[in-house]
Length: 444
Ligand code: FES
Ligand SMILES: [Fe+2]
Image (cartoon, rainbow, N blue to C red; front, side):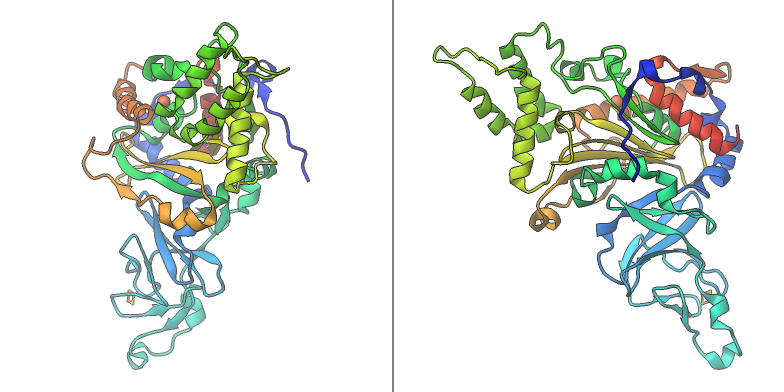
């Protein structure tokens, strides 16, 4: 077993190992987009959905990446497998819809049928076909595996194991959150955006833009130079800033309590913790009503206790998570395109893919809000997936709407030929880490 490495402050990280000047052509150049397709998208493990989308043998879904199409199916043995979405006869697309359920795949062109494990089951009218070696005509398999409740696919049949791609630090840390037991609640939405997929990754990899784009978050995210802690796990990583009432050192206790009460407008899931938080605060008032905290206690630690007790009462085992993980959102990134904020009991994930047309100025994003719920409630509360067809019609929550509006503005600036590089600053270390990984995969 590998020892869990602590997250470290920026001051302890060697900045010289990261690129800080980033060429703008990677966001706009069609040739670079075409090269990304080969070196990243056709080689990398990538998330293709959630395991609970395919609970039963015969459940399948398509995963399209650019112009390439794959089918993921749960076999009779319960195992998930991935196949190139093409018939081995004359190449017709096998699965046209986005998902479905079937005992066997039948190609609609000449009705060849395939088992769920990809084997050629039968050809129609064998008298017309003549001798054929069925073993030579199996569906073409690609690696599929699972982690934290997600289904991962790799379009490269020669790919190494997912566990090696993620690394033990990532697996162990994310498993502690019981992410595999979380359910999409409230939001599960896909939409086309007018920006490169890396504009999305960059935007969610730094908190510096809070000052310009999300000023209302400054109440609870106290941006102090060097307060963030980072985990660097190869091409992946995480960063966390304390979720703390602004300037807690100078705010009165009552002001801090009020700031926590105001949280649900920006962090709705805090609402379920508030009743216990309020009663814990009430217990700490003296006869005159003055709030008196115990030794070492702060309003932040009371919120953490209330969160731990509320989640434990709900049935979630949070014993492997620290007090900081009760309150602070860790911002995770898994190369190439998965971003997630996660704290005990909840997570929001954002993924961005290149646009199927290959146009580097467009992408598809997929945003999902997850919550841990007792098993009995999971299917009842599962959010229905939404695909937005008309721009601007989906009601994102405020902070997300602000990012949605911002990202195309960056793309509009990046298009200018006169701008050859963008300049990252120290607070954007996670952006630099992403581009270091991108450079490596691209051989740049
Ligand atoms: S192409 Fe599929 S059966 Fe002919
Ligand atoms: Fe943002």
